[in-house]
Length: 106
Length: 210
Image 1: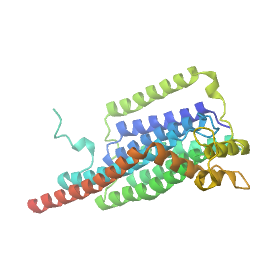
Image 2: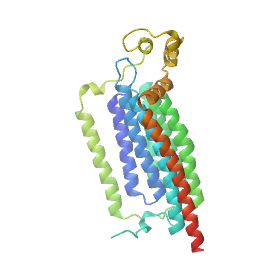
Image 3: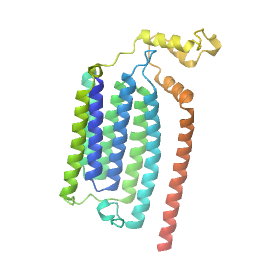
Image 4: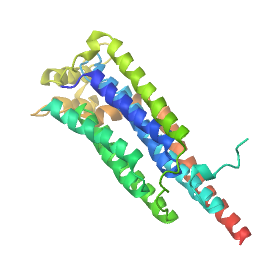
């Protein structure tokens, strides 16, 4: 049986992989997917703490899982708006490569 | 067996994440994102969070993955050109996550010893005790049978004890998080309207340019 630390380690590594993708990749859609991966890693932490923090009646503490439910809802709304912005960006500039989008560089 | 499943799903989640960063083709990246999320859903189910695991598969592997692949195919993207990254980007992209991972490792190793214990299993006695708790009023008196909640009934009257995960989450959401739930509904409405406005404005601009 895995311990709380094992789950936290998997979650931290998943978050680090997502962070590496956000920094390294130049395709804005893949950056967006890596952001989703980081959100999901955070929800793994919440579920692990919810399961290991047993409340007084012997059941898991369900507050953490409710937060994960809300995170999933916000992530779905975020993906819809973000992809609409990406499509608008592609129509305006004909590129989704972040290295080519330099009009705001100081 | 539990340990083996933890390693299997943890490997799926981490391997899918690495492939997501590594693949040059965006469609392959989207599919490896789904592999990663399925591994993550397996970890959720191993933590007795059945509802969250199923919702994870439905929303991410069902809806969000289809949306990503639809946009990738709509924009008709080619593969990224090889070796167009600057070395500073690669260096920063490896160093910062590595520093973060080392910090996480340090925090976990210095944590209190009781956190390395495995979680207590949910037994028949636990479920029965929880059922008794649901049947009581706040002053310790037993509720009349007509007012006993569905959760109490599903906990108390079953032959093989199962965790009524969805019932308990629903009870928590609607009793303690009712206001955030309604705000979430407004957020979804705002997102829908926002997407419509965004795509409408950009098509008007395209017409002006033509």
